[in-house]
Amino acid sequence: MKEKNTQKRKDEQEIEEKENQKLEDYGQMTLEGNQRHRKIHLLSIIGEVEGHENLSGNSKATKYDHVLPQLAQLEDDDSVEGLLVLLNTSGGDVDAGLAIAEMIASMSMPTVSLVLGGSHSIGVPLAVSTDYSFIVPTGTMMVHPVRMNGTVIGASQTYEYFDMIQDRILSFVSEHARIAYDQVKRLMLNTEMLTRDLGTVLVGAETVREGLIDQVGGIREALRKLYELIDEKKAE
Image 1 (cartoon, rainbow, N blue to C red):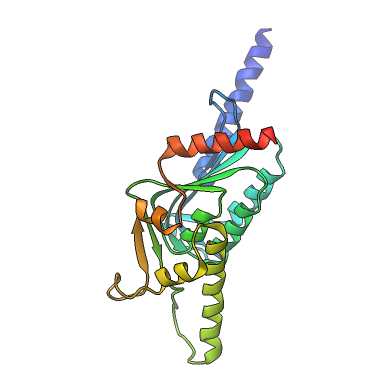
Image 2 (spheres, one colour):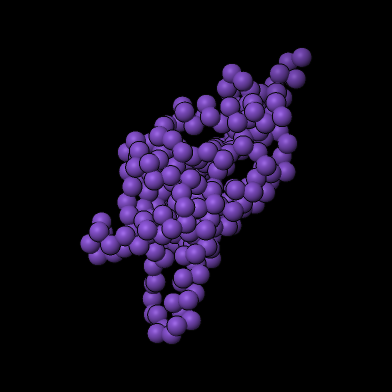
């Protein structure tokens, strides 16, 4: 009996160590200590979304090549009942961000996002990719055109390519939020707010009024909504 208890404590310690390592490496952990015993996976998208090129070691980054396999594993795990996505990102690689957003949007389990601090640029599609979205009252979202870095070849094909990228972002946001394509484009190409750039910055309730985010709220509201979506799915 004593040996069984010792082994049990050892197993629990190993599980806790793995969870702590996962949180440290990927900003991910499993929440299952709630009264309803719901198993929720927590995904944090923090800092800049990293693409094919590595960012400097001093930068906070979310690596899409780490996130995508984790999301695939979650989809294949019948014991996980819901996904909570926490966002505080300045944006980053467009293709990487859209890849994560498309993956989240295609998951069969209920998903909820919560914008903390900010969800700018490619963070906008990430925030609206879930079944339901929240933003804290002081949270911000910046909608702006795709920026061109480095040398730009003065050819019509170059600009057509950037238009195509912007169209992908506009289409995704309008399909997954309560906002029309033309309205997102208006926010993206706004010339009145940012003196040296195009775009719009929205704070808290403004994102809800524009139709980007579903509701203003914090972690309490986000988890409550996720439990509700899980219960609805179980009742089907």
